[in-house]
Length: 236
Image 1 (cartoon, one colour):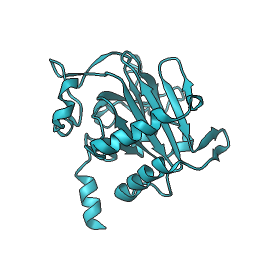
Image 2 (cartoon, one colour):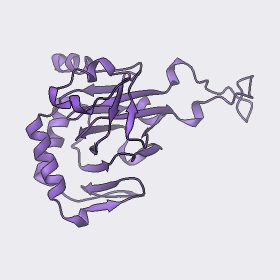
Image 3 (cartoon, rainbow, N blue to C red):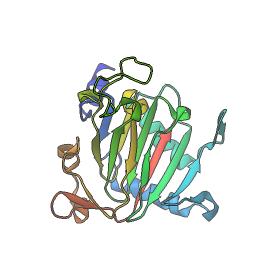
Image 4 (cartoon, rainbow, N blue to C red):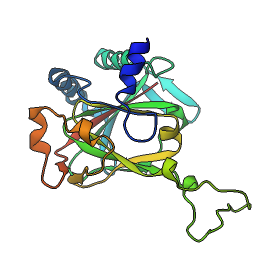
């Protein structure tokens, strides 16, 4: 048990203790298997949104909670692997969102809400992308409020070293897990551009130890091309 914790600790990136990036979490063949099932699903499984499309597996998230449906076996095998190897999920993962982003598509900074609290895992498929984390507005001090007081005269939380924006470079087949402060105090999103800069990403060194097959995605000046990617977000 201690060895597993130490191994997981070695994948922590950035200054927050609960942002974990695991490169090559799955193999090329496992990625191809997942993609074949994703694109082999009935057309009715896709929901077209403004800047992406998605598949919803495991049920419908309602304001009162999850209205559950069984996950298909090809997803259950993946969610079990995530749970067993991370040991961060308090119960079995029972809901998966699959987002497809084409070049020049992304998602606005957002939080996943209480239904997925306190931990989320994101498996990246297809091509690289940069995910940006920005502190929630409640941790940003109004520049005109030089005394650092909130509207009620109390002390406000300043945007110090504990609440600085950061980015994570997500390579194909990698797994990103974030929880606690990274979940509740930050928004996460993807810029809607075809070429994304990864300079300064908190996991730059780890992510660039990529396979030879990933090299075509890399441009000049520390950028990656988003040639179409899929993101599988697993929750419990």
